[in-house]
Image 1 (cartoon, rainbow, N blue to C red):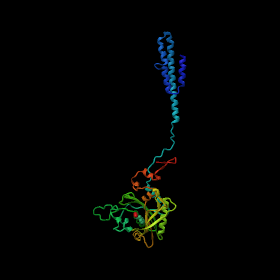
Image 2 (cartoon, protein in one colour):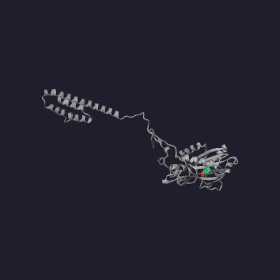
Image 3 (cartoon, rainbow, N blue to C red):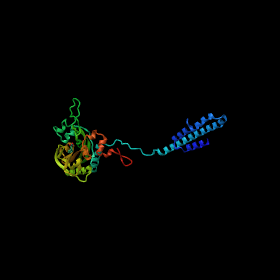
Length: 357
Ligand code: PHE
């Protein structure tokens, strides 16, 4: 019996896991276990023999049971310690960044344009998107029969029955802000007017609402040469190139005289636009010297002051800079798509120096 005791106590002490312990329990105390078999032998003994063997076997059984229980809880404690050592959480770590809403690409490009012109001394002026006929057309020397006024080109609001004033329009350009700013501040003036404009158009490069930035510089001694320099500086800064060639093509706008459309030298080799090299020309804006009638309409004496104006499509130059083929992407697409075109500001920097998407 002493042999059995030391055999099992050693085996239990050496057991490395709970499964081994359970096997040992079955081997010793299970139905066919070594100790159970000996218990069964008690029946064959004389009462005297039984008197000593019985309690001794019971004591052995208890001893093995408590050794098993002690070892089992020892193993469980060790397992818990091991888990505590390996599974830990540093609650002082900063949380992972989740991408939040970010600036719209058009707003980003508007900011870029604004910053460039601010460097050249232009401030930002804004005006209403619902304009009167006068500010949108008449004051800008756009005559009543001009096609821009036709309903197929322009969105008109309705007047109440019996109200015979001319209807308001959704402004077709930001040029009315020129008039409003000159009226409010007079000359000299140097402003850009970014904002939404509306025309009844819808295709790959036209949406009914789009964005323009118009520039205006009026002073006593301003010429086309100043216009050319300002536009060159702008194009170089915006497209991030050291040199650029501009082409001024004679054109017509009612509100400027002379008028010029401006193209930039570019290449489309490999399907991507490169500004400043190649044999293609890309039209990017309209410009000219402000018509004396426009200055007069805005309360400025054209004999004393003159200057230039220009208008650029923000969406258009954004498409060109970032290679977006369809203007509609800006207004009805999802962010992943725009990100594909490299709008970096959509991505939030993470702590490890990467970008979360
Ligand atoms: N207002 C013109 C347009 O929307 C652009 C322009 C502005 C042209 C100023 C010349 C001078 O097309």
